[in-house]
Amino acid sequence: MGDILVIGSMNVDMTVRVKELPKAGETILAQSMSYGLGGKGANQAFAAARLGGRVRMLGCVGDDDFGRKQLQALSGEGVDVSGINVDQTVATGSAFICVEENGGNCIVVNQGANLSCDEGYLSRQKEMILESDIVLVQMEIPREALYQAIEEASLAGKRVILNPAPAPEYIPDGIYRKLDYLTPNETELMRLSGGKEDLTGCTEYEEALKAGTQKLLDKGVKTIIVTMGDKGCGVFKKGYTAYYPAKSVKAVDTTAAGDCFNGAFAAALAEGMAEADAVEFAICASAIAVTRCGAQESLPLRSEVTALAAAAREAV
Ligand code: RIB
Figure 1 (cartoon, helix red, strand yellow):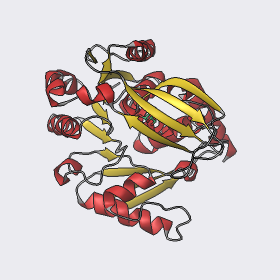
Figure 2 (cartoon, helix red, strand yellow):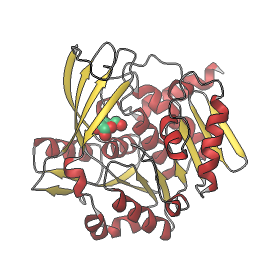
Figure 3 (cartoon, helix red, strand yellow):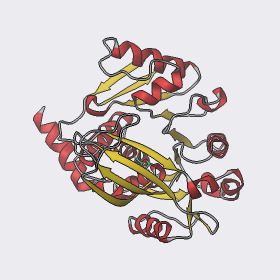
Figure 4 (cartoon, helix red, strand yellow):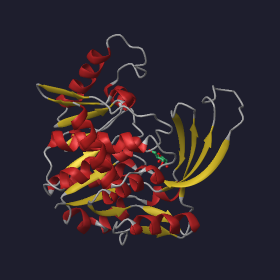
């Protein structure tokens, strides 16, 4: 079994449930409000560990209740949190999440202590990168720091997975060449590749995906896995495309579905599953996550994922 290192954000999530997401300038009333633990980094580490991965995490929390709860929750799942920095000077990151009735969401993140996950901190933790087999990162920590970690991991021959969320307009070309896997959703893919960002109802959907992924493959990424919500996901390499359908479930909250996919995919690769099996495993895991509310509290157990995968196989 390989070792997974997740480098990324840890947040407290403040979630309101609403009928429909508000439009610009609109005030609406919420149906409920709840606090939970989140952050793309923490969610991915939690998912990978819960599914059986050997996981370490690097990132920063504040010296506050939310930070302490986050560390407890991660270590409760078996994540090694010994390298996580507790910053005395700033509060734990926070996310403000609106979830609408069909499960769709929008999220605003106040980075807080995640900004302390900088180049200096990650340089001091370089050993952890060198001791891992798979390095999984997202984009809620300072960019220069995560690019530095990607460079170091790649130079040391580690498998690198970048989940480009939230997606910037631009990632340096030199970074794309260091990635074994890039795992955007459709919107993130379109932003990174300079295409039309909203593909809702797009008649040339597959062409748009192919054009977007081709641009990034040309920059040197080995494999791009585009997560497409209830349409499943697509795997793109030079000269190769494969689509995997989603499992049919009733989504109540899509928060952390992408995180669940990434954590599950990393866990599956780390235990030696073939890529296609790892994608299928990750699809099953995220299908379960969307049937539950919240981020970390929605992440499935291994037994649930294997049961769904078995049921899906039988149904074929
Ligand atoms: O991907 C979902 C996560 O995004 C939430 O948990 C929130 O904290 C933000 O990081």
